[in-house]
Image 1 (tube, rainbow, N blue to C red):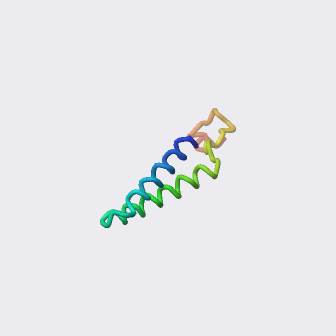
Image 2 (image 1 turned 60 degrees about the horizontal axis):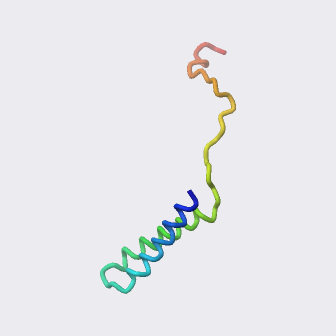
Image 3 (image 1 turned 90 degrees about the vertical axis):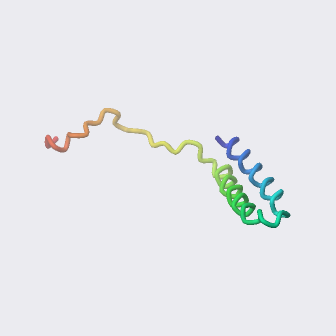
Length: 68
């Protein structure tokens, strides 16, 4: 996933640099630059797996009704 984020960051940064000289596309270039910065934050943070392990895999959703 880090590779994909790095690729998105590089492509967005190159796209932003290519659109800066175009008069009407400067605002779109700003959006692309923001996307590149966000993708770089994702790459440098190193957060790969955000799942939380379940401690008790067998859960009863109505256990509280039975008073257990």
